[in-house]
Picture 1 (spheres, rainbow over the protein chains, first blue to last red):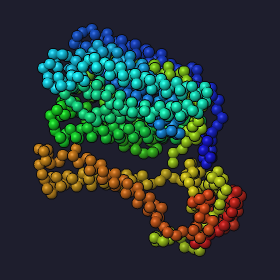
Picture 2 (picture 1 turned 135 degrees about the horizontal axis):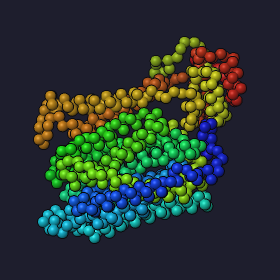
Picture 3 (picture 1 turned 90 degrees about the vertical axis):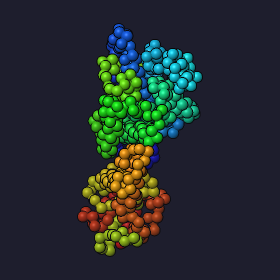
Picture 4 (picture 1 turned 180 degrees about the horizontal axis):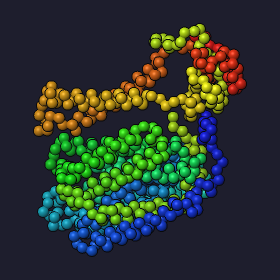
Length: 410
Length: 185
């Protein structure tokens, strides 16, 4: 409790620990069931439709990759939030930290989404064909890095890092709910600084491997940051939606001050995404080197050009001016609209990254795009809901919980 | 407006100054003064007190609008200057690109909008606070120095329509002020 914040609406109240759990029978308790149904229907239909004819197979794996990237990126954003939260000894965010913890708890399950893609490597990645590599000096040069065995080992390492960090930080946080031991806060902090380094490296190389190498001639050193920025923005959009629900459930714990900070972070990362997207574009455009321009040449040709323009408007210009005023960031309705909008934009961003490799020259929508996206989002929702139900909505005995509850923006 | 003195309405009385023992008392006093309908008054504390703006009934600052306009002005200057130079004043073909190559102008446009916004924030804040002011009638009270150390003060200005030397001082006493005094300008 701060010693100089006697404002009436935020006075710390005595709360029963049981009221800090998701109530029995609450709609969110059905997340696992709804998620599993969506996953079964979406992914089942995708597999059935995609594997039925050889012509659809390539579409299936590309659509699946878009969906898997979308779902995974929100979980990665959650892990990032928790790591930063502990590293900076954040006080304000304790009441919403569990949203990040529940999102990062999906990461082990996200690995399952990437298992089927192993069978699609041949359709996704030109460098996975020995004959194509043999004819291409550039691919031959990159072969020590870009080969199937090493690729799978790296993917395993990325998921091992994320799973380890997520499970360890999650279990320490739950342990503190039981014991109230303040030393656990220090242990989580000590873990988070090296955790951030591992996170940065693994996310960067993951995006190089699974997205950038779809076009193995192209390279951009900023690409990892681009993927990271969009992912964290998507997580904060997701966090906004969950925090709004939590605010309804626990008005004495989560209020518009916390909402304001979450939406500020969402805003910050949408700007950061635009900064990275433009930095990547401008340097390539300016230097005009053939080995770098391919990526944008593809995306500025045919109907992809309109997609690129729509993305820069919808992912940056429009939400930037919409979210600029303070009143919008503090309004539940307006921030929910912005968050939903940005989640859709993030899905389009993932589509824009992956699909031009398959449909060169023009956008070709397929029902598999929708089915795979819904299915992957369903897996995320199920894993998120399962984690949501088995722990309190806030870290019950975190030493900074009272500080977080009385937090105010100035 | 002078550099040395704030521009104040004429009269030889500035208003009343009350000192409170701690932030909580000042906070509640502010709520009471706000509810009593006073409009020309201020609180002085050594550190920011969260929520005091609400307790004082302060409206949202207009400063963001100054920042926005200055930032847009900076952006316009950036794109305008580069566009004019590259197309009209001194057109040069650079790596075969069009004269008006807007992506190349973005970094400078961005920086100038930041510069405009930052200048707007600093000098707009100065102007709205009538800064720099080197002297203020409240400085005449020796105890007021403690507003930057451990004192929590509330001042009500004499040109507030509700100000009355006796009743205002009495109200501040009843709100729990340790000390209330009238300040001459």
